[in-house]
Length: 566
Image (cartoon, rainbow, N blue to C red; front, side, top):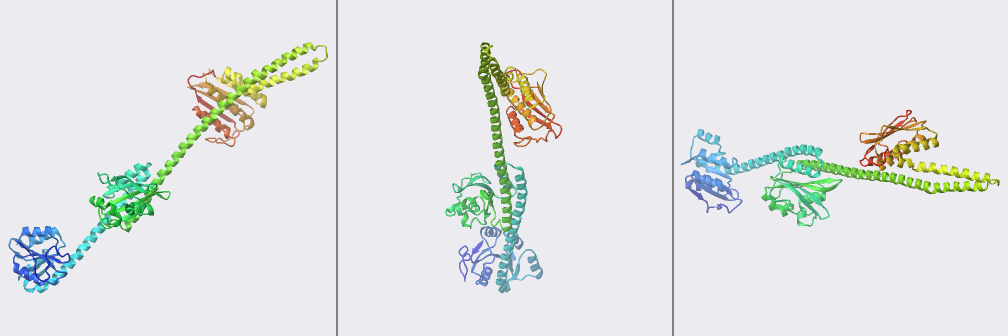
């Protein structure tokens, strides 16, 4: 059985006055209850009360209403004081219970206090009831506030500890991951699992569209927040949220209470429905420009204080460093790819230029031989006939002088023809062509040059033959101009699917670099040769030192369908 106040001095019906003092009486005698109500008529902002005298009614009252204090009699039939105290403690251990009863001994009063009651007032001294109620209600409020503050500190400490763990794991991920999407995916999982955040999502900044585009979210299965809109414009309703503020300011933006903060208004229902009460947005920068935003949503209000903000800023800096490193690595790889492509184009160009030059040399040599050479030969024949006709006239001497000059021109033409492109190179192969160029080299520079062919020469395709011939010719010129050599030996070998040409001189030598570059003793000539060989998947090796000569070995794989024998 229960009773509820509806009349009396400043008595307030339950549920009608938020400022009223709400008291629950555990009392089997209605008259005694009304006496206590009358004693408390002027307490605080009014009085709202209810009387219960059975266990079911007490349970229902505690479960259905909130109370400021419970006033209980020691002797209620069917409802012991111990049971009443236990039921109250189950609901709210800070809810004060004041025991009011008839005359009891000091031992009983002491037992009452030990069992959990906050105070004991005798019914024949009800004047003590009001100050006891006011004191206990005030102290209960203090205890609840203290407990709430302790709980808040514990939650903040837990968030801090989790953030330190997150920082350590994110640091490992930044070092390990070299892909932006993989890094952000792992970071989101770390924040969700180790950070204890209810919702984590990453947004990409699109300044052209003036929006933050959510890329992925962890913590929901219904698509939020990837279906939400986050404009950057401050004037737009949604532009005042933490993501937009983080992008505009470049600083961590925190919403400590989603229910009260106007900045969260456009998404409030969505967030609260997912248990979110606090929201932080972390700007991620590349070269000072915000390119992405990490959003952390927590279930507790005021989950981010100043210390948390500092840790979040460290986290944002760490992730920004990771993104910059990944972007720098990506730029480096793109530059290397572009450089490799340019080098490949240069190699191809050098190769094609060499082939073109050799073909042009051959064309000029053929023209010299077929045109100029033939005309000179015909001129010599005509001079021979003219000399026969001029015999005995004294004019023979002049004809002989012209004929001698003509023969020298024929020899010079043949020499130039051989130097441009020895016919033997195309007719008889690489070795024969090198023998012809070596003979001309010795005649011009006075340096003996030997050509040695080791073993049977495999068939070498035309392009490889022309490339090796041009390379050896350049190396011979180097030996004469730079090395001051007294002799040169060129050895040609083929086998194991490749042709090798070794050019050895006894000149001054030099200190070769691993990769010759244009300029210097081991400069453009060797660099050009190396690049041309690379086009045919060949290589050049240099063995040299100051004072002990130079050996340059050219190796090119033999290709199927080779042309003239080497």
